[in-house]
Amino acid sequence: MSSVSRGRFPVSFWIGSVIVFVLVMVALLGPSMAPYGVKDQVKVHSTVVDGKDVIVSPPLPPSAEHLLGTDKWGYDLLTLLLYGARYTLFTTAIIALLRVVLGTIIGLYIGMAERRQNWWISIENAWSYMPVILPVYFLLVRVNINSPLSETELTLFFIAVVTILGIPSAVSSVRQKTEQIKEMPFVTAAESLGAGREHIIVRHVFPQLKEQLMIVFVMEIITVMSLMGQLGIFNLFVGGTLQTFSPDLYHSMTHEWAGLIGQSRGFIQYKVWVFFAPLTAFIIAVAGFTLMSKGLQARYQMTYERKPFV
View (cartoon, one colour):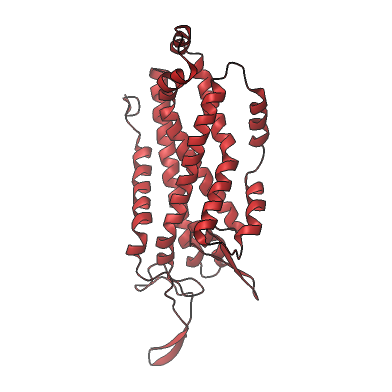
């Protein structure tokens, strides 16, 4: 009998959990772990190599002084990643949590309604075909670039927009599962004994949703991170985008990882460490949450097959 079938979590869950735990520690302790200040900059300077004066200018390749190298402007990439980790991880987690909480409340009451709420199902179906990046882009593009708002205000605005636009998908997951549970014998028995809707939701339906909600929460984190990566291609970074002219350049004000990828994508074939350092960090984060999600889904499926809705 496999470890999953005995009720334990599979290996993928534990690998993903370790990755996520390390990332959370990095997000919490990042600034104190950084080898340099976030504004420390390597300037163009000359040095002597083999008796000859050599001009040194960024971006500098990985070395003992700069483990991941520097970007075009001389900022240490490891330092930027450590400072930007909190915006990358905590912003996605907050959005995912808000989506799940609001989606659960709405989904439970719509799913428990006496009549099927076709008007809401129509909204869900229509919204499922809408690429969320489109409304997010048009809501952010006028606000995010060279904004008079602070980084905190812009981050909160991003959280609000992405949360609201993602609620229908969370509601859909909860509603569908609630409608299934509502038809189970223990729920119909409670109804026949005179239990009210709130009592049934709290005592009978919600306990059956806990594992499902955990999966939805992790999946929402992955979805939000993917959205941040897509927005980075269009130079819309969490916490604000600073645009400079002649030439046009875009900088992430918070150094979140999708923003670092977006601002450095011109280096994909030139000084490749500038692009691949944040890209690798971002991929590791997505992989960690994906492994957690796969592990949770496997355990939930095996548990459900043994004892559905018990």
